[in-house]
Amino acid sequence: MAGQIALDLFLGRARDALVEVPIVPHDMPIAAALGVLAAANASALLAVDGQGRLAGLLTERDVVTRVALKAAAEAPLAQFMTPDPTSVSGDEHLYRILARLRRRGWRHMPVVDADGKPLGLVARAGALAAAGARVLRELDILGGLEAALGDHRTAKAAQIELAQALLDDGLPAPDIQRIVTEINRDLHRHVVAQHLAELGPPPVAFTFLIMGSGGRGESFLAPDQDHGMMLADYPDDAHDAIDAWFVEFAVRISQTLAAIGFDLCKGNVMSSNPVWRKTASQWAEQIGRWIERRTPAALLTADIFFDFEPIFGDPAPAVRLRGQVADALKRHPGFARAMLSEDRRLKVALGLFGRLAPIASGEHAGEIDLKMSGTMPLVANVRLRALRAGTLATGTRARLEALDEAGALAPGEAASLAAAFETVTYFLLRGQLDAARAGRVPGNYVRPSELAKPERARLAEALHAIDLFAAATRAEITGRLLG
Image (tube, one colour):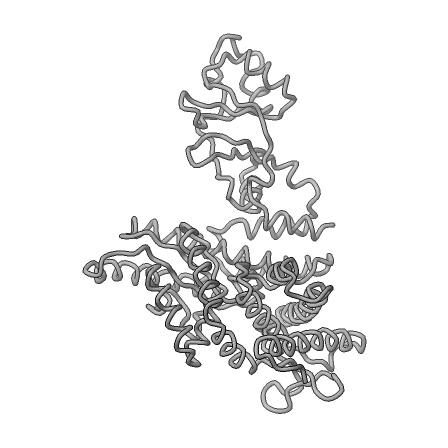
């Protein structure tokens, strides 16, 4: 139960916890306003100006401290309300709102639409009533993103503590990944907004993209940077000036992300690299070239890009591009076969008789890379199936659900693979938390000899299910029988 509450807190938005309260004109007589408040049995009301925009907030506390025994019945509400209160949009993350309320001792946060007109409010007491103290402690730390930018070690430590608390509470590891990913995306948004404010309005509109595990919503505890930009189309003769602005913008973003704990991508998959910073038309042309050429470099780049997710700016161009990708892949089935050939390097860590097969020698002898030899074989094959089917989802579980709904999987196969994904993710996440507690950098390696016998059997069973699915995907795409 506590795990589900945490999931709702960290993935929810203001609109998910919206409380409807009376909305009245700010010049209404205070006696009438109090009558409305009492009739609605509400803890607060919102006041609006002549254009219907939020003008003030009146709470029960205001009634006691400002109104009682002090007000003439005909005095305007505006005289007693809190004017121009801090407000948020319906898309604001719930955990940030609640952390701000706790930090400032407020009880209510008004929620407004794009025109500043009130929709309702988030009430601290109701939203936090069921949350445990441990989750609240991490909420306070992670909710202060401004502080996180100043001391990323504190934020990272809180993220690790939160993940451990949720794992202890029995929340499935993929759901913990979603929470970790959303917190990381929020940090990315904050960094983008910070540098946008510093540099001023961009010369053209842009959409900021997260790729790889961050795009799928499957981040672990030590992700590096995988991001790009999609720019609105502009005339060729304006390229030098426009691109110079975005180079500066992208470099600042990458440097700040590195400073707060997101390592620079070793493969340079960052918006500071022009390969990952293109106009909408250029992205469409690039995808067409990847599909036509099918070189190893093109296949690897496409594999990274196809999990993109827009997290800042207008998402519509990215949604259109995803549709273009799906249409192009349907027209070029040979590309799927080429991707399959490239993905065959991803083999699960199983040996003879279905036993776990650790690395034989070297630095990681006796260990298994549960990312490259566990989750990634499933991620890659599910992605491939989903792209061929025209599915627009990016997360592995969401893709499995979509394939199941489309009848593209055998009965029960989606549930079986989702369970296998959860099992491998659980052991990988648990290993990272163990490493963090021991003062080591969280990695992707797990030592089977340190697992209990039933755990080794459970992990082997999950890897076997993934291996069978990979073989079935090869058979489906190549037309060859399973062997």
